[in-house]
Image 1 (cartoon, rainbow, N blue to C red):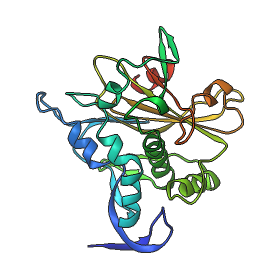
Image 2 (image 1 turned 90 degrees about the horizontal axis):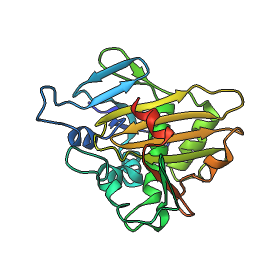
Image 3 (image 1 turned 90 degrees about the vertical axis):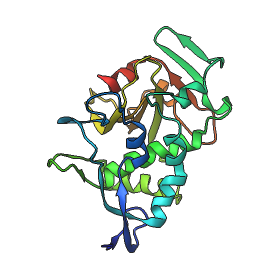
Length: 249
């Protein structure tokens, strides 16, 4: 039965869609039939599980579901790492990096043919927004949610709904894992422990792709230079950087 309520993206009263936190296409891609339990891995702050149960709830209307789909989900879901390929990483093969060090390689993603910076930005922002605007519950009673506060959540909502620019006090960066053995699973957004005057930091991982969201005045200037944007120079890191290790530990 269709549920009537306030859509948390457009803020209008509408019929709410059966919304997936992480697209169902991701679960399908991460199934590994060759092992005893083929289900993808989901890691939260207090649980580790392999399960076919997808995080879903009546949260957004069908029109806003299409915004998520066209705003990065469709493109990203075709490019994440699977048991047979990692199409996003392949796009950087043979390209000249702007920085090449033992533990990190940086590329200007905006100059790499086939890389959609806008899709990556919108996808990552969309996942952080979903996590901030709603508590997503598993069948076993555990849940996932981040608390950004009403003002910051509203700023993300306006960007995702195409009502405003990306918030000026936030930086979003992306890392790719170049490890031969990928982590085929999902880590929903979690808050990282801050030290001193550091900016607030949140991260999530989906099958080889690691997103880091930094908020506030304490953002390291070097990290600002790595921000992902849809229109300007967008360094994109690939390798086993410190950021990446956080997503697979």
